[in-house]
Length: 305
Ligand SMILES: C[S@@+](CC[C@H](N)C(=O)[O-])C[C@H]1O[C@@H](n2cnc3c(N)ncnc32)[C@H](O)[C@@H]1O
Image (tube, rainbow, N blue to C red; front, side, top):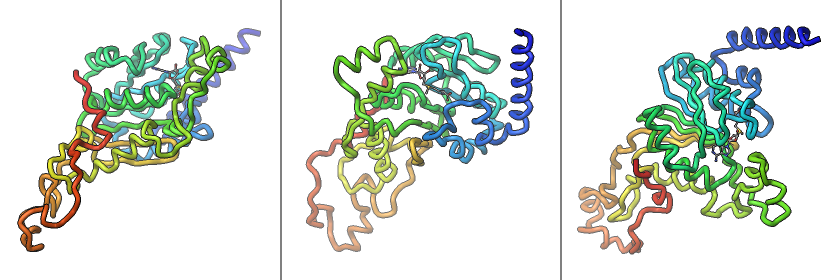
């Protein structure tokens, strides 16, 4: 009977490889074939990835995905890594997971074991990979872990790189506290993750990852802030576009240094003052904040490397 199972498996894999080859240019079709977490209900990421990644498909890139899949089982997961390998046929694919997933490594797929919140581990990973072109965050469900990882890894993206953060809806799911839940979660990364999301029922809670990403949107326009003495953050200067989708945000890295027409150094340009018939900003009678520190997103300043 064993041989029947093996031949069935062989035939299924063979069939999938043929279909994957036919659909190699289309993530919308590849994703269900690999049965990863990019297309299942609630996670309709594949169509958005297709839009953003299609122009990069044949480039030689370094791509890192946080969260290999399969949670506690060292032999389970790796589906999305295999999909990226098929799609980006000239690229190196790296994965990070809390659990040792070495068994899933293949040619062009390398997997590191460690926590996405461990800065020294991430530094070691970066020392080995070098600058990255695409980072996909699909690891821990915790808001705090997600934010910390973004803060450490976004600066490691190459110019023109893309940071895709999945599961931003975890912002809306608070942690469950109490003995009942902590004992239920004990020993299961999956349950620990879901019970400890650390989101909030308050849509404006500044602790959530969704609110961190929302705040970064303002930074796109930092050149136009009327705020004398403003000192732009790394994110202000290096995020050039942010694309929100249900459960997903995609950020592009570049040089956000295009000057504003009316504003320079966060004050009015001399020709504007002249046109308004004033000599300084103060004469406008506006109330400027005495606090010239940068907005909250800047506490995510570059981690030291
Ligand atoms: C949703 S699964 C990833 C699914 C996979 N990317 C896919 O599309 O098929 C999340 C994975 O993140 C891992 N994980 C959870 N917390 C982590 C952490 N702090 N650091 C690294 N990996 C973590 C889990 O072990 C699990 O395998």
